[in-house]
Amino acid sequence: MAVLSAIVITRNEAAHIAECLESISFVDEIVVVDSSSEDGTGEIAQRFTEHVYVVEWQGYAEAKQVALQKTTGEWILWLDADERIPPELAEEIKRVIQKNDCFSGYRMPRKAYFLGRWIRHGGWYPGYVVRLFKKEKGHFGYERVHEKLILDGPVGTLKEPLIHYTDYSIEEYYNKFNRYTSLAAQDLKEEGRSISPMGMVFRSIHMFVRMYIFRAGFLDGVEGLLLAVFSSNYVFTKYAKLWKLGR
Image: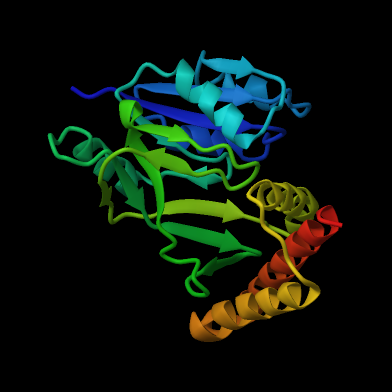
């Protein structure tokens, strides 16, 4: 029988962590790496697993890599604290890891709940993400934000969606906004990228048109409009910070 480990990294996720860990109670091992939370996240996590490790914050990818090193399973399932594995997806995961197939990992559709509405357009759904993989075949990249899972081998596709409870309020979205755009700009600078003022404008307009028009974000009502505008602003701010770093 294949052994399945789950990893979650946290920082002040008391509002989310219990439901997240409860949704993965079907796995053989849960590893939580907590970056010195001040809201009791670690204590809540200890109700679900003895494998809770408190570390100094060094970045998203580094924290996930630490968690990965602490696991003992052949298969790894990773998710963020604001994500959930519904029962249908749990059953599908349990089935596929017992198969003797050629896949090094599996991607799954992700369904997002944004400002009180399920988002079904704008490029957000199905929004496939690779979250299940063989430990010996994968590792995390070193991007400061939106770190990537790097896999050696082919990737299969699951049918059931992962649930993402993102941004219950506009305040919550913009609390993360400044930190994420700064980290993304630093990554772009290290890649040798640069941008002109007109490039900032073009890229942000392109993002809005792509999400709201071509990917039918308008079908998600006011929330779809807000998401397209916020995403456009995210792109503009990220590249504005890159421009400033290059000055």
